[in-house]
Image (cartoon, rainbow, N blue to C red; front, side):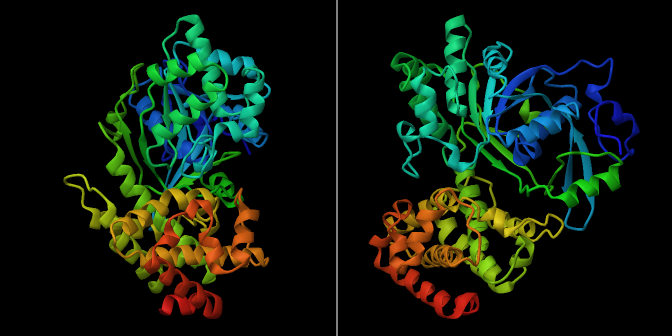
Length: 485
């Protein structure tokens, strides 16, 4: 079967949306954004927004150059290189219908370990005015939420030991690029974090400045003063690509796509409008530009992302594999909703005109979309980074206010029980801190609350009582006893 390519666009079915802006004779897009972390979410979200702009005849100087840093990124490089940078994005509706588009906004991909000089030159190019990131919640090297310090990171120590001659991390590359632009007298680019972290702009700033300070204090001060780090809130449920997804594209579209993407139809992007070097006209394709993202990101992190954490562990303990299967269990749905409404919502500052109850109802519709086939295993990946960012801040706020956090305590207990059973070999724990977590979960339930990322929760007698009660039910009666209570 023919491989997806620009030449193959002419042969695709009429109902597949294609990037006409790449056809011969059209104004060809030019790179204006360098992106670290080209995965499924980036391709279903930021790259999709840029593609929409280009289809409208806009933003042709804002194409994306993706950069891969890890050995596994060679697969993405090969997939995109062999397909002229193209891939398919399928929006899966709950009624079983699909909308398929070919996305063309990623016009270049560089694998940094083999193309280091090309990466540096791309970062130093005056046409590049934004460098963006989706490197996961655990990818930030200076992060107070999990106690990370740049000076403790082996990759950072290795790259800064030789003054960033061979950067290893996204932050090392960003610092190297900014240093080169400063040397050449070129204005700095804006650093745009698109990861699910509250205050993600500040988190990105701390990581970049911390790496710079290990190399050159004066450069670090210049970055802290001159470089913009706007915060963002991003949202679109995007599962891992499966062989069935590729086969679906072969049957439906008639081409071979090495790495297709599928996602839910819903998409949201709220961006702090602070881009000294300029930005694409994102408001033209539905992006919300605001002065302060904080309220929006808190709603998303404390309801959607925390809701994912709530369903992930009790769903697996109850024997489910898929998110939509677990959320159709009325017991699980009622418990997750109770967490959102009773403990999440009271900690939020809701923007004027925002209907938070309708937002929660919509979340349950999204979670229940059977056509997405999102897995509970994906939601539970890297919990040691996700729980401290999505759940713990809410619980600490409730405890500080003297309010109950009973359902949150039960959520932490479900994470403990899942981790304990992973230590016993029943589940696989996909987490960089898996050994530490399984050691803590194998002892007494209170040992788990002693994890540094859960500090402060054990100070509340009410929280501890609810946690221990839930842990006991899970230990002796499993998910049924937990949910019955």
